[in-house]
Amino acid sequence: MAGFSTQRPNQPITGINVTPLVDITLVLLIIFMVTAKLVVSRAMPLDLPAAASGNEVQEIFSLSLTAGGDTLVDGHLIADSPALLRRARAALKADPQLRAVLRADGRVPHSRVLHNMDVLRQAGVTRIAFAVAPGPEVTNGDSIPAESEPSR
Image (cartoon, rainbow, N blue to C red; front, side, top):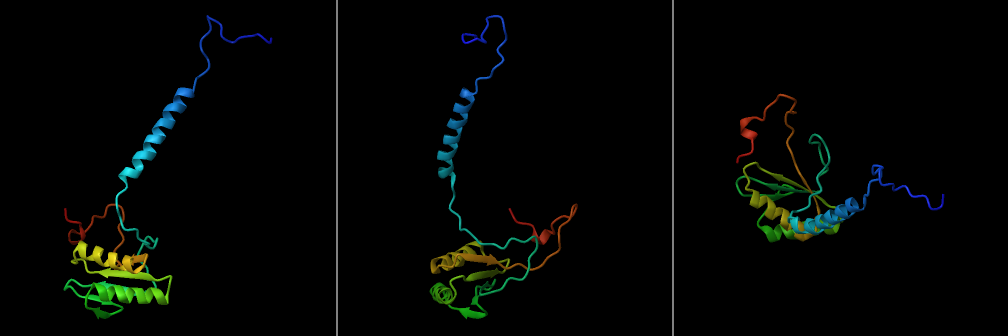
């Protein structure tokens, strides 16, 4: 039995050679890993609360942006971005686990919201949440009201 061979000329091949499959899989994995770093887009990471509906959040540093162009921190009017930066740094120094809650009117331009988020990030605030107003739940068959649909 020591010299017995399972390869007989008239028998069908019953084994599967998986070496080419493993080689192809490894090549595809390497290609994916290399291209994944090239596709990464620059985005601002957010620490958003995980909840199905909006609940009250303990506000430690409240930043409000009005449609009229005013910026308020904890209800007090702020003159400009450097003043916001100073207030955020002072609040972060007082509480290293500072969480900022950003309230923006629906008519505030996206660029203004991102600018203020960037100022908070420059101050070192990394935990930013967005305040939401409670709204109706969407169930199967409901449609989004026209005034809240995103514009294209």
